[in-house]
Image (cartoon, rainbow, N blue to C red; front, side, top):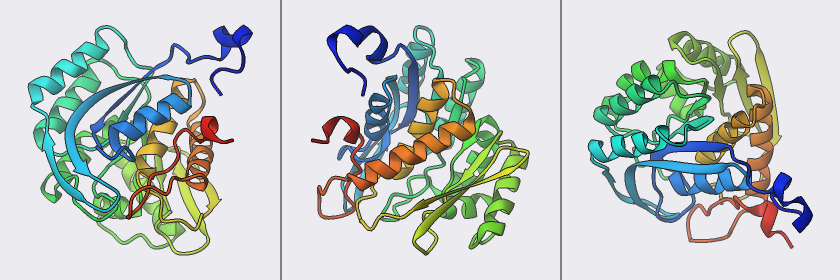
Length: 278
C-alpha cells in the first residue's frame, strides 16, 4: 500500500515518479485511460494522460468513438513534456494516420523514456479500435519506438501476417516484431486454449516463458491496457524489463482474481484490489 501510517508518509506515499498514458478513453472505466490511471495509482506513481479518442463503451459493446482534434492532442503532449517529463510512457489506442504521426513525432522529439506500446486493435467484443487500413502504417511508425511491445495473439497475427497457434509461432512472431524495430516483445498468450496463459517475452537476445494459471471468470475487460500500464509503472521505478513484466503479470492476475461483477458483459478487473480488500 502507498500509506501505512502517519510516521511513514514521506517514504510510503505516492512517489514523485510521473508516468504518462497516451490512449483513448473508456467511459465505463474498465479499459483505456481510466484503467491506466487506476493502475498507476495502484503502483503509487503519479499518473498523467493524453487523450486521443473518446470511446463510448460498456462491458457489452462499443457504441461509438470520436478522435480528439490533433491540435488539442499536441497541446496535451506539450503541456506534459514541457513541465513534467514522464519516466515511462504507455501508448494505447491509435485510430488514425494523423494521430500515429503526431504521437510518433512527439516521442522522438522529447526522447521519451521506457515506451510501452500496446497495439490496441480490437475491443473485447471485436469492435475495430484500430482500422485495418492503418495497421501497416502503425507497424512502420510505432513499432520501432517501442521499448516494450505487448501484442496479444490476434494482434501479433495481424502485425506478422501469419497464424500463431503454439509457442514456436509465438517465438517466430516475437523475432519478426523485434526485427521491425521493437527493442523487446511480449507476446501475450491468454487467447490460447488450456488452463494456463503462457506469454513469451523476447528481450532481443533470449526468450523467457512466463506462465500463469487462468482464472475462470468473464470479468477481463481492459486486461491488456492494465498490463501495459503496470509494465510502464514498474519500468519507471527502474526495474528491468523482465522484472517489470513479471510484476505486472502478478498484479493483473490478482486484479482479475478480485474482479468486479459489474455490468452484464465482460466486467472490469479490480485495479485497486490492494487497497479495497477487507
